[in-house]
Image (cartoon, rainbow, N blue to C red):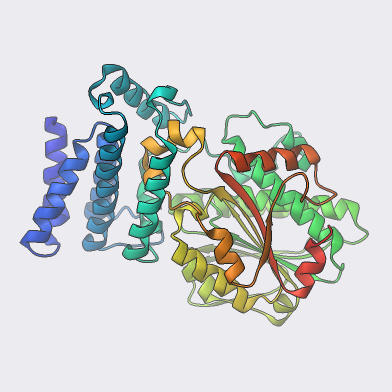
Length: 452
């Protein structure tokens, strides 16, 4: 272990672990973190997490809506350290010689550089993780996050985004500010662009479904869109394009309320808040008033609002109340590659919260299932996005147990108005560990979705 790593471990001991628990707990924590820093695959990553945790402990550099004490920080670092040690040990069982193989070590070193530069380049297939280990990562994260508590994933997401540059993240502003003023169909042609094309495809699919629902709904009906984990605003941008599309094809502009919930500090302040003005500028015929809320104690959602909420998703949903008109209308809940960060117990609570408040609800959820895609096995599973991924195993059962009818989006189930190339592309994802669920509950919701 290098002198730099030893110095970092000592700083972590002094600043964080020294004030946590009893002597035995501190010694166990030191041992786990030291093991993790010494791993071949994840050692450099864990060092980055130690630096991020120290920045919070020493300088108060909080990256999310969770403001942790040192015990909570120690729990977060302990979690990802245990995840790293476990995953590397399992990798070594299936490939016992690779951890000492100079070619493998170079591959991992190059991968870390690629991540830092926002480049997605897979390791050689012979080095890739097995699908079973991808599933094991998901099971470990889901169990651990369930034990750590509701907000642990948001703290970890904050530390996660503090350790890399977001060059691969397309922004909502970029999606709506394109000089060509592209519409939904225009973006389906950009499947090969560099900013995580799977995200663009599913955001556009969400937009086209929003358009289909608005076209089928009554023009005096209020549609409320609630986006969970809004990030840079891309999913909301897809919905904005859907609203525009519906307005150009209908005799009357639909009535809208929009809410975006995001708990990452940089995403919220630097991307989402400025994005809202761009979004409203792209919908001149839709009357919306922007409201920015930082961890509100309570807020009533009404028609004509564009709410931006900084906070934990479940916390924020609990603090939202729906006005009478919203309850009588249609609520569309969107989630694009967000819910894999949440353990199933939190997802179940979120669905129950929406169900309690919205009699007619439609969920549009695109995401990973169990870390088994080629990109996961050759890239993300060697990083924190693999270790922190709770997946979505059993999400279909959770939705059904809460009274929702559901199906997977593909060429056969998509709305008739949807671009069939896009629908087929989304449907192909079901063979590579991705899902796109459409789930609905309530008579009005069923009228819009069934036979669309």
